Length: 62
Image (tube, rainbow, N blue to C red; front, side):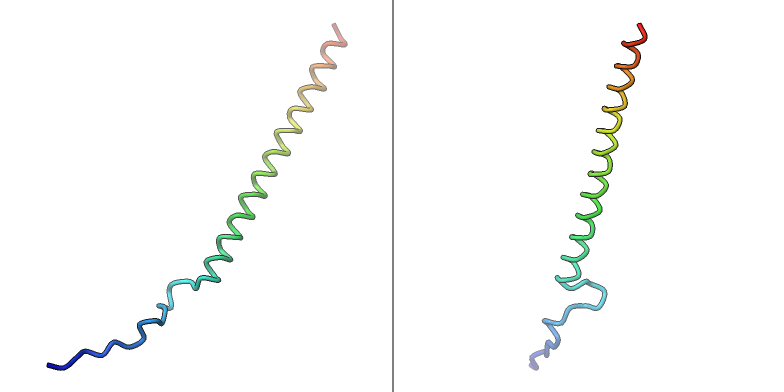
């Protein structure tokens, strides 16, 4: 009975990214999440300041 030959066991398939590509994709996604989170945080702070200014202006009119 012949033993089957297994070759290229350690070679990765071409359609799977290498670990370095996976790390790069993760870092890009993380950076995008941080940037979008930062943008929404800045927007929230700007709305808070605008509301405070509006409240002050309305209280001065009364």
